[in-house]
Amino acid sequence: MTETKKYEMTIKDKAISVYLIVGAVVQFLMMFLYGNWFNLDILFYVGLLFAVISGVLILSSNVLKEQGEMEKGKGFVTTKLVDSGIYGIIRHPIYGSLFYLFIGFALISQHPVSLFFGLTMSPFCYYFMLAEEKMTINKFGDEYVEYMKKVPRLNLLIGLWRKIK
Image 1 (cartoon, rainbow, N blue to C red):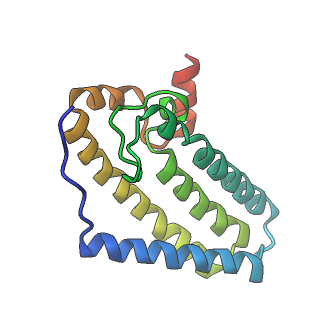
Image 2 (image 1 turned 120 degrees about the vertical axis):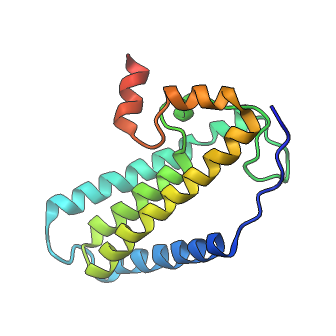
């Protein structure tokens, strides 16, 4: 394991983060103001499922704190690679929870504005996943590269299938 320098957010990263926050607030409000806009119940229930999956992912990511030997005051900076629990199924449960939440909110409200935000915000989560992977490869090297071969980035179905197999 090598020591990595602290990540400095670029102006682009900050702009994307602001967009994600504003978009999440707008989606949340649209859900309550215009819930089920097109009255497509199947999309509404799929959206609820995505929101529940999001909650499960964020709650189960606490294994990072427990097993990652995190230093106090350092945020989510670990000194040990965690590959168990949810991290044995997908590599990015925290970003994954946001990804699924944004899609879930869009499907629940079905309002065009919420759908727009859901479709445009999800790729930004992916952008941050890729950036984090570069930093993690620098930090953990081959150990993380091997982990990447075993555990999918975001696909829960493939991750569960591999875990069961």
